[in-house]
Length: 189
Image 1 (cartoon, helix red, strand yellow):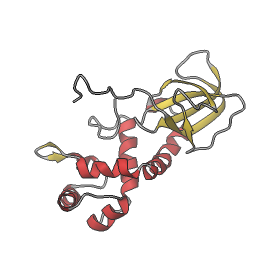
Image 2 (cartoon, helix red, strand yellow):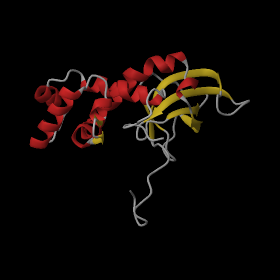
Image 3 (cartoon, helix red, strand yellow):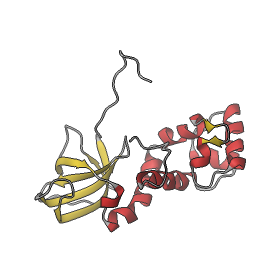
């Protein structure tokens, strides 16, 4: 928990990854608002966002765009947060692959979860919430990290034998974003 003198966590995103670009869209968040819209996921807080783009801007899926208070070259404003159910089909289809690329680009942040996650109850460890990690892999991860912390996903794969941990983490994040889990380990509500 934060002490009274500790800095409060940021409540906004500085960067987002494009999931879908709708050149002539209608806002889900602000009624009557039309124009070029982007559906994206925030890099830091994994927030699903609706963004109003500049009229002549173009975007590709997976593109990392600045959306903070400064350096907004391609966007006008962040209109607000989206629910998973409000994403376009294209955005939903792109979510998993975009997350995988985002996780690769922020490897140290995501490998830290494997080094730090703890038991939730006496019978359930937070690592077991990641798809593909059951009791056996969880025990191997905990035993290996007690010897030496993991520094890369490649090292995690070699030392524990778990396949495609980046894909597994991305699947868990999609599950959390879609409301498929009561317990969240990656997203902030």
